[in-house]
Length: 271
Image 1: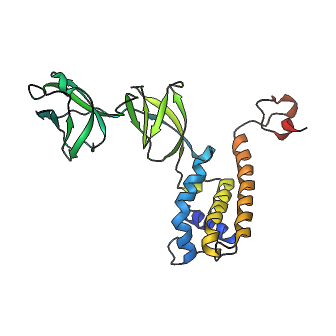
Image 2 (image 1 turned 30 degrees about the vertical axis):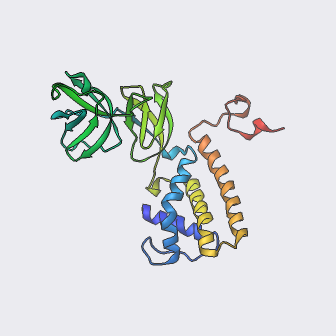
Image 3 (image 1 turned 180 degrees about the horizontal axis):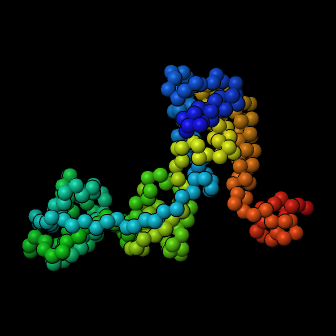
């Protein structure tokens, strides 16, 4: 079964929850299809990000933003112009200039303006010559942290910085910022758009989450009882899916051998 076919099945399962008309494809010109596909990605990504789904966990190594070598750095007063083909920087980014024999050029600077093959920044002092030496430029956080790592394009939420395990970091925009200048390893929740990879409990939760969002649009906001029921059903299915997710891959240890602080079974909380 293809990913598109499964997506249609998920949408139809959502529509069936409140008696709406089924769809036949992801391209048909119906209000049901348009309503579903308009919100599908948002609902899917929120559901994925809200919990550590095993099928959506990914491991990856990251390296700091790469150094580039400018063709030249010239000056006019305190304004430095860095000539670098297709540099990829834009105004309001911070960059680190290093390797210039003239100290005024070196440091962490805010990009003042940028074009395709050059950018400018404002130095604290006026140098006496154009920059010479082994010049390098790299994107940096600008302050508080020293290095910047671009997060994966499919990242929805960082779960863990695996190594170095005790490293202090923050997530801002699409970057991880820290003081580590080597490779780091992360675990994160990825955006899963191939629905053949979604296990049945997660598909059911996605269908109900869609139904909660679609029912007011297709049934009207006055139908409060239907939306309330759908929310309650979603909470029930989420709890069931989370239990299955939690014990997946863990051995089924006999009751008498289970640790009170590490087991996954309800008897441990029975009164």
